[in-house]
Length: 127
Image (cartoon, rainbow, N blue to C red; front, side, top):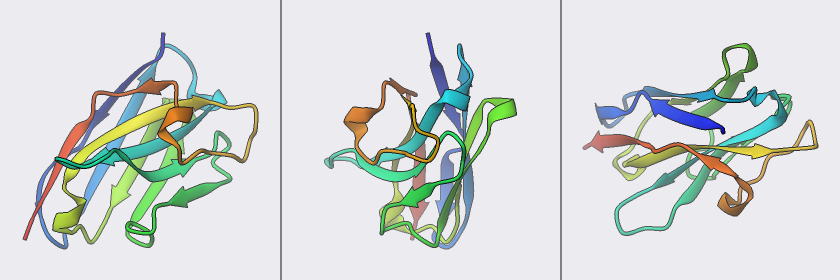
């Protein structure tokens, strides 16, 4: 069984930064594309960022492009989301997800593609 645990969330002022971590246990993440999603109160869960299992391909939602960076350390079985220039609109619960993938340079932006999910970490950005 694959288990994902997010950490690093918290309260930050607009313009600040946070780094989220997602530690995976139960299986090596080297065969998984990984993604970060978020869900704000009253809204649907939305894609934030994705990274292929080789880390050769990354992608971002337009709303976070040039502010957020996804990365992975397969040796540590960990995925990161560096979030800079945070805005109040970034306030949400952030979820890490894993998608078993045949392809080295592919990730999905669709939540339905991901088999495993963490429980989420709250990010609150004050104005």
